[in-house]
Length: 219
Image 1 (cartoon, rainbow, N blue to C red):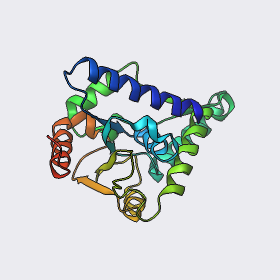
Image 2 (image 1 turned 90 degrees about the vertical axis):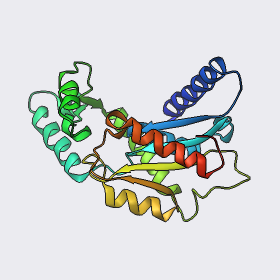
Image 3 (image 1 turned 45 degrees about the vertical axis):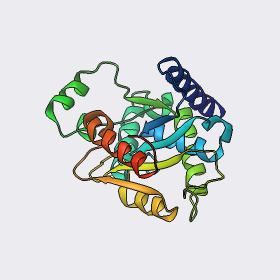
Image 4 (image 1 turned 60 degrees about the horizontal axis):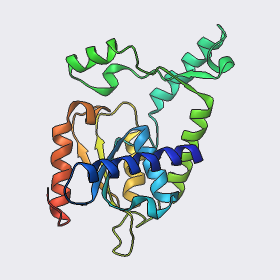
């Protein structure tokens, strides 16, 4: 958990330094995190030091991996069992992700690009799953009524959730129920897959600009 939080803090530090180096002013930055990164950033939002969020105006979490889809969990378990017979899977401590290119996009060109990507990660370690479970535990525990309502006395950024409604990777009903419980700001995207940031950056950029406009910022 500590290593995961240190990674997030390092990402925020690098983003701030790039903003300061590439701008004449020191205006705040907006942070976008997707999938597992969105889960990790949310856990850090709740349990990380508030000081780490200095100069961050808004946090936008895309398709957060708080609850994985049950079909995806079954695919991972089944393939892990099969690979175990050949010395992999549970025996090797490397479990298959079984994420399909079509889980991320309905656009043929993006599916082809993902399919041909030789660097695409298709296995994770047991340690990775333990850290992920730890992040999920933090988030699920800290989601209480009003826990994400803007607070003028809070130095942390405003949080918005961008959720594709046809996402085969996350459990949408459970995710929505949890977010509504905390009075979260949720923006739904009809007919979008898990790779919203990848295939529709224009939609996401407009949504972020609209949020900044509503809160008094400059889009």
